[in-house]
Length: 151
View 1 (cartoon, rainbow, N blue to C red):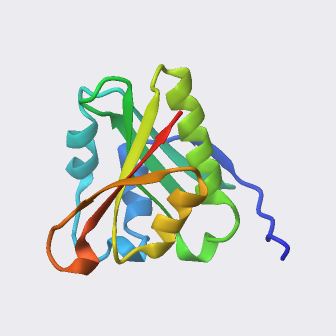
View 2 (view 1 turned 90 degrees about the vertical axis):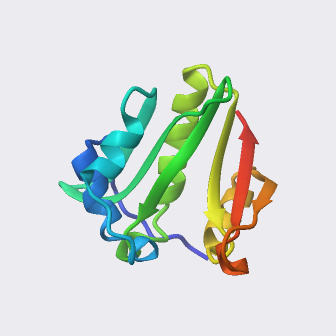
């Protein structure tokens, strides 16, 4: 099967840009967030915030920061707007983040997702992540799946 082509660039993002894309990811709907959601979490942390864009239009984002564990980077949030999925944007953002993390001395990267998001679990597995923990929180659909990868 041939993958659709879309030309886009990846660059560092402002908290406002992260919030804008966040608001257009259907999987995040239902929980209202503000700019402080991003600024408070990233304040005083070594972090990387990225957006994918085409001609000034924001298509997706990925943001992460240094975990409390030494040499470990936490890929905290990310998503691609539904109309721009299947163009390799999530993969490009993940590759950029992982290369940056390795260049900055991190040896591990991890993320958490939920049981109700099998596409995200599959994405992690396809990128070489391993499931290292399941955190029971809420109903089974909301169980957190923790995935980790060596860099």
